[in-house]
Length: 382
Image (cartoon, rainbow, N blue to C red; front, side, top):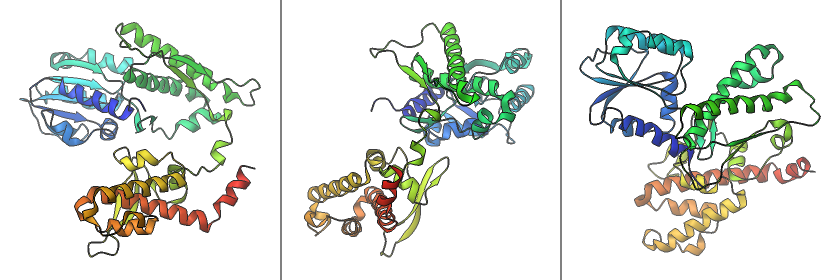
């Protein structure tokens, strides 16, 4: 499947912390926005293992620490610059390593540059270009709920240009992280029906200008590669209006359509573990990239997913016959497999993962049959 953007962003963040003030213990300071970005891909323990004594929020009350260096990883916002200027004024820390998640606007950068206190304390000023949120190994979002109304509501026309410049910066951040200087292609309908049909071409121009500017100031980028030059396609939903109205029967699509999955910063599903046993408990399980069963099966058709789950479990029984008296040939339906899992206390992690996905798959199929969804699909696709 190639490189994972989750792993790429995690390594960028950890390498930056690791190579900042090498060997020295230091405080790390973040803001609400940068913390969400970091927490999305990096465990706090991994950060603390890189000679970080503690992680502080810049908007909280913090102790003076004049004998300790500080690593700031901050989002480029005016109120955050206010906070850091207050830190410089009080000389809260010893030496300052100042790192931004994306490019700092000119007026804010100028404000810092003109400060005598800031110049005395800053030993590193760097932009990470990581302002995006990986959701899957090959899927990212910007978590901007206002993007749609800004781009398509007529009353927001005066906000469109600035918003597209911000989007272009974030797209270029992703390209920089991946080491890609792509050829840019965009969608332009032959017979446009709405004034918003020009948005793809405008965004493509903004991205091209932004990435060319980055290349101008970073001559050694992109790094050498044996792969052919990548292509970035900028499209909008109008080129395919039907897909959002059709229901897929892949595991991921059915799970999100039919089950009470909580889909926020993290995707979770509430299930019952150790059902029928003394230690039965209801638990909210996270469904994400660390869940290998989910990653391997989410894009499979539900029929193939169930067959794969049962096949994998049958293979496990054959390889570990000491943990159950049930013959592997009996593991031919979801209920049987769930009963067999209850007898495997030695494999709690595997047991929990299989229990979760067997429960989800079974509930999907119950709804599928009860609501006669094949008939609905036939109508949709007719």
